[in-house]
Image (tube, rainbow, N blue to C red; front, top):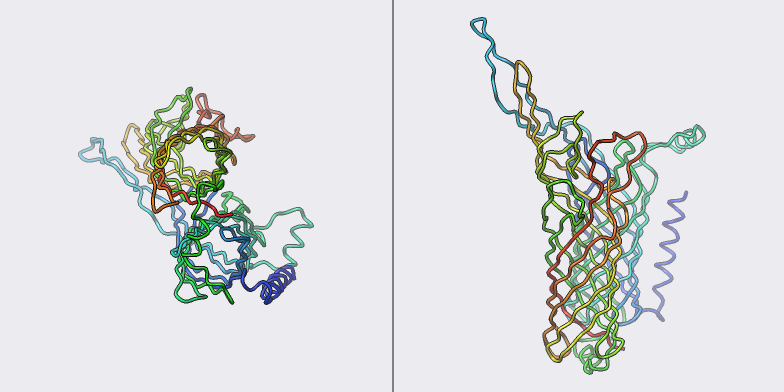
Amino acid sequence: MKTFNLILCIGVMLTLTSTTSLAQKLSFGEYTGINFSNFHGNLTTNKWVSKAGPTAALFAEYSLNRSFSLLTEVGYTAHYYEMKSYRSQPTYPIYYNDVMHYYSSSSIWQPVYEPNKFDFSFLRFPLLIKYKTPTRLQLGIGCGMFYSVLLNDDLTNAERDAAEKEDRRIYPPTHDWGYLFSADLSYPITKDVRLFVTGRIATGQKVFIESLKGKNGSSELGFGIKYTPKTRNESIEDYKTNTQDSSKTRCYVRPVVGILFGWNSSSSKPGNYSTNMGSTTGLAFDYRLDNTVSLQTGILFERKGYALSDSSLYYHRFASDSKYKRNSIDSKTDLDYLTIPLNFKFSFGDPVTFYFDFGVYTGFNINALCHGTAIRKYISSSSYTVEKININDAVEGYFKDVDFGYQTGMGFQFPFRKNLKFDLGIVYSGSFSPIIKDPEENTTSYTNDDRSIKNGTIALQFGLQIPIAH
């Protein structure tokens, strides 16, 4: 019943918004594509394999002004997962002539398929705020949240009601919610129609497999068409007319992409940590206070992290204890954040501009993955065994949900086609406090357990500064 009411409300909303008075601000369309599942949480027992699944939606987009819009949709998405475990080949001592001979060999853990399949299908309702560039080949970047309803629920309402009365939890839950980040490129093929390609990252926040604290997530790729009825057909010449006098413009937007190098910046780190290469992409906004000083913010998707090469009890951080045997670790931990900076920016020179900025940031952890190899050795009076473990663990549950830090940067901007400027900059950032969560109750306490890990990054960014017309 709840699902029906939700669908009905969305349908009424889409119908009402199709009136003639709003036609010039409304666009409608559809897209289809594929998603690649990303099961995240504390998945340190088995390897979870990403599989492709279908994604499709009907959407409505309302233009707030020339640059910003609100987008909602009724969509279908299916996340498919498979679990693969690792088993080693045992090594046995060899006996002949009544003499025991020691036999040394290595056994490499090979994936063994288990028929454990997890499929979740959802009806998804997102709400995004979106920015689009004033160009014919249009770049759009958006972020927001979604609510989704589980369609392939094998449990009856009676079973769920009985579990609730007995104070038992049943998994999976009937719905999910989370965050959605999107980027698309579109091009007009007629006066009213645009074709587009879109990429998305979705991260669910509800636990769907309790024993693993497993949550749904996906990376998506789609192709679609957008129709804007009775449009005024704003061409590229219209955009040029509205942004000719950039000297009077106070607001700017900068789509940015870049390469990022991350490490553990803690001064008290006991382990052998090193750098890990990641990436950064997103949208920055500048508001000019005067000819020199600006306020800067935005939203960025950043892949931070670090590498660990040491002998440790954990794969994703250093830990040791004389009571337990350690493994030789060579791993990398990727930490994905949605980052919101707030900086003061100082700019000098024209037309070539030099700038530097400083401020703070807030990063929301949306995913964490540890991958690499670990070596285990077993020595006894009769055998010597070496096991190689392929690490592919989701370790999001070990890290804090929010990271606060500082950042500073500098760069140059070069004129590009009149009022546009090409931006080349470098940004350094670091966490204020450790990003590892405090230990839970009844967990093993090791003598040396590194919880002092902090994010440290240097990013080389490329962007295009675009004035926002009044």
